Length: 74
Length: 407
Image (cartoon, rainbow over all chains, first blue to last red; front, top):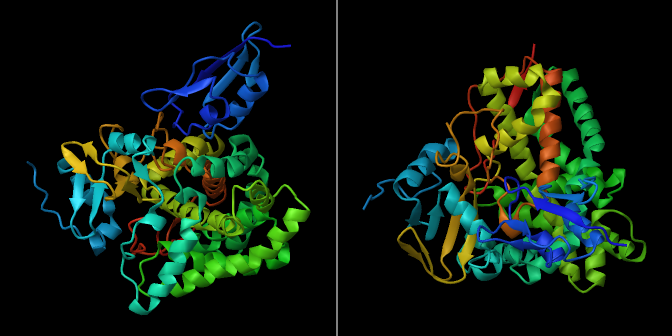
């Protein structure tokens, strides 16, 4: 069962380490400033999105259940 | 054209003692500066450093593999063979690689150091700090360097490596030899290579063992990388040592430079003392910014790059100065002010981009716990010397000692 996610990257924190893009390239992409953006929250499985968030070295990625608003990460 | 009349000697006593005016003048007058004496570009503005760290494809980190120029400061001629050993050793560190290899190597070790995983180390760090401070309190005075800052990171790293308690003094001795990586003495190659080879000799049997019986320690993580074919055995051994080479001196400097900043700014020390737990996080960020553990890092241009009207040629050496970027008035209001409430604080003490410091969260936890504990236990902390000396390095901002006392 897949549920829609709301995923965003805090630009004040993002250092462009790009591990999120390496782990879930369909979800995260670096912009012209080489900071990550969640371009397509539905681009990969929830598990992959959460793995990317977990592996952000500066805790810049936030994940919510788009329907209930429940925080899934952090 | 604003010509800089500053000397290109970055190792003079005044620049080592206080690098901020020197690099600050370069930042104002010639932010992309060709240093004739050391044949390298000196980059000093915050926006340039951020841009360069985020464009890793233009600035190679495979420096030891590809830069044929000699060690600086100079070393004894008889030690050139030892320097070759150091170069080959360093070249196998995962951080001394570019993409695509770097990404595959970093993936192996990255998950070990996530913020959540490092947060789980906080109780261990707290206990280690309290034990070190107990021993100091008993004496009534201490050298923050020798008594807290030097042993703490080794205790943590030894635990991460899964080193049995009985072997810790041996690892600590090797760690102290490895500190020569950031020193300037002409005869530093001998102790450094002894430390490097000592680590290889010590870690080798542990790797053999972890390949058969994997555990949750860092050596098992690297050994799994060897099994997957990402690392050679030499790379596993070298990257185990990297924990100490990258995580020891840097943490020492954070703890000592931060403590000194508090001693020199009684108003900020008072602020921390009022609410140690509440202030520790932002205060640690400000310590990282104000007197950064790493002053500068080196890269090699992979192609010609235009910057501010200058052309950095392919294979040119580049050094970007974190300690100057962190004092750039374009990025920070009142940059020379030590302000532990500063927020946001976009310092570049850990770099940025794909090579952003792997151990950043661990360093933060150690800094937070030490500053908090000092404020709680030694509120009257003061310097016990008039003279403070720094190691003659342009990479590290390292005090030689930090004697303090309390009433």
